[in-house]
Image 1 (tube, protein in one colour):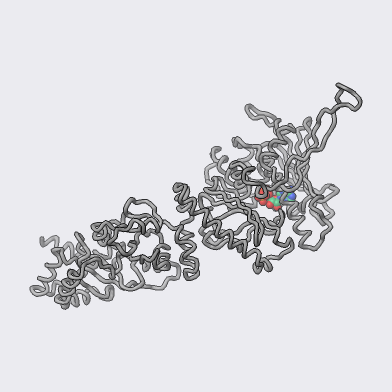
Image 2 (image 1 turned 90 degrees about the vertical axis):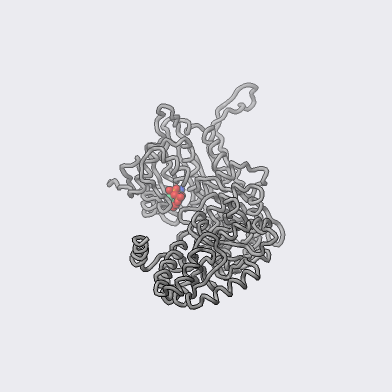
Length: 628
Ligand code: ADP
């Protein structure tokens, strides 16, 4: 018989299992039981969708058998089984290879990470055994196959006999070694407690023969050895239990196992609803984004159960896009078991459930924000971007639902604040919500336009993500306060007299500005004096809806058009350069063009925008330096 090699990734994982120093090796049993349970779900589900009602859930069970003497532990199920190809495919490669983002190093420490992270599945059997065989017969087939492996050197597959459909996984338990007591996995007591700990809710009975002593009938003190078959699990799914019957650890371990997350969630939402529809939901808000979250690969959705039977793995219709990070499941008796995917989309009950879940999630997130700010901030740093997209999506259709969950870092304490917090501490003289866009808070602080706001004691919200300004433009206002970009030309905090004086000054300098604009070219719409700068000589502002930051974002998108914000070059009327320009206008107008170019280049650089003519600018400046 030919020994076949594992695929490279599988081999790596396998090596890691075999040499594992992981302290919770017992989870191998959880993994194998979970596979068995899945296999029975599949069989049951298929029998339903095939219209074959001959199969009853009661016919399905998981068995654990122990042969201490030969160090054998086996887990059997009468589920869907595997064909020869499936054995090859499923056990020769890692199903979740996509999510197994191996860190390159093979340091032993790292196995803890991987195992905790993904619950590694079938291969975890190799943490406790030196030889694993899988005998399987697919439902509907009359052939059975035996897969055998002693570890990393490969595996064999050969035909064999098996009376019924299903799978038997047989482990030859490793000899004890040093601190490692593998023999414990052959003890019925250990096995029962592992099952209780991790697999109690499994919906099929997990049965094991247990040797006990019983009173010999008709005697007072004589005992005999008897074998009793016990069901080790309670079979009540965790979400069907009452909240006070479930410990935090149980919620957490269920989460890890089911959703392959290595970090505990920031929030568990367990709710039972009765009324127009009746359902139980167990939802989790993860504490970090999965590696593929912000990519097309990520599939949102909740598991959907109908009276305890899973009918869909990722029901996308249960979650709005802006809450796509929520993991969990919903179980309702109001849904028909045989419902197809297409029908589900139009199912009224499902719509009602989705609506009620959305509200629940929103309320719980708000509570978290109010009662456990640290966790909320953690959550927000992982999924805030998604919420902001939520505001922007569908032309702002959901903005009301999401706006209260948003946070932006503000200039006051350099900490994230909610919009409601911002508004509540606005000084009386302030009528708008001010924001500024840039790569980082520090860079925004350097913008000349921030000076006047700081002087007035107004807070600025830093928008450092691409989506930020788009979201804010969609919101338009919050609690009646409008959002104002501090870099927009319309921002004007001066008094009427100041405005009038400035207008006059600009009027007088009309020719000067005409000349400057001519020298700069299409880059700017206009040049003018401003009173909004304190120390800085120049700034760029934008006119109309498209801001400088939006221009940057839009131009960086794939197949971007070449969009341009309408820019105004503003010159600080109180800076000596303003006087210098006015003087030049009458004494040496030919020099104005060079001044204009350099001032414009400076303004672009301050905004973090590129310049087209760096050599020209450099030689102009050096020329002046040499003269000075
Ligand atoms: P996962 O269960 O996460 O997919 P595993 O490595 O545990 O990963 O198992 C790989 C695949 O092998 C499963 O997806 C399933 O298709 C198949 N498999 C494992 N155990 C069984 C079983 N007892 N019956 C049927 N198929 C099984």
